[in-house]
Length: 401
Image 1 (tube, rainbow, N blue to C red):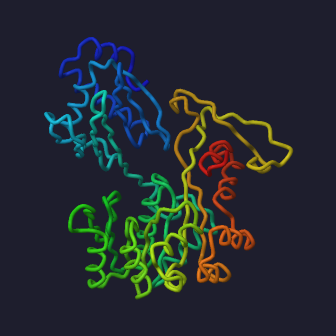
Image 2 (cartoon, rainbow, N blue to C red):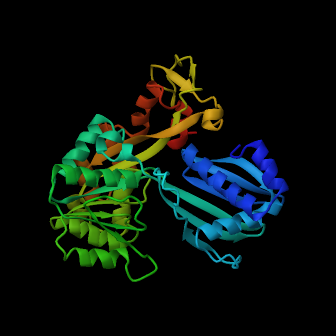
Image 3 (cartoon, one colour):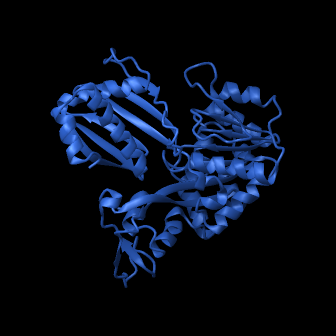
């Protein structure tokens, strides 16, 4: 429960302005203390349900009478600078961080949307993760870490990051840029993002307006005339952006970006589908990094399980295995925090020939398997062996049922 029983009873019995302010403040503070990335205020026919997204999973943490719903949403809209008298349109805003003591949160963004049961609100929390600023701190395997460092030493080429939303791609890109600034000072570094999520001291960061005049293609074309050496594009969303990005990688620029794809092989095919010529893909793409975040077992309640003697598909490798239990410290989820798993594919040899021939995904995957490529599931097994995550969680994140 996000709010204590005594406070909850008071809020329900005395729904005046002061108590609504206290209720919203309590929920925001509790979410921050628990490390939630999002707070959902969801109206139903009879209740206002509050959910926290903890370690990537949405968990119900409290419910209040429906009578409080309008006042809670109105308070959030006041904090976010939204129009309190408009309940029929979507609105977006930013909740200012007034507490100088709270240095953990970088930004709080509010989105309100009308539904048949009332207005639904979501607050997104962005944290200052000082422990996730360097490549060494992110948790990559030694093989991938060495390959990333080799990429940062290049003067041209493209590194693509793939993975679902919330898989840490922005954090990885920021760490890559910081590594370049640290090891190769003096380079001109520019980022194009929608929106700018992580501040990077020493880099020029540009906010993109997808519905305005400052689009990715427009900004990228102009920036290429300003002598940048390293570019970061928040996302390659369309064929026009992809074409300019690939050209930048071919003309003496080091470029890092993300692309929607579930696998490295799929990323190469996606570029081909966008109309990029095969020879341009093979000449510009240095590597594709595919990553996910798996939940870390709560150290206070995780439970050891007997090892599986017979090797089965999806079964953990030899070594210690643990399962999630749940306790008050982890909101009874069994997990607390997340850890990175990844795979990295460099475009060379037979894989390059297959891309030039426009082979399908199954052919590209077969080539990677023949070359002994360690996919994202195999990378995650090391965490299962170390008792950091559970096999069930790894299977879920990797789509194994």
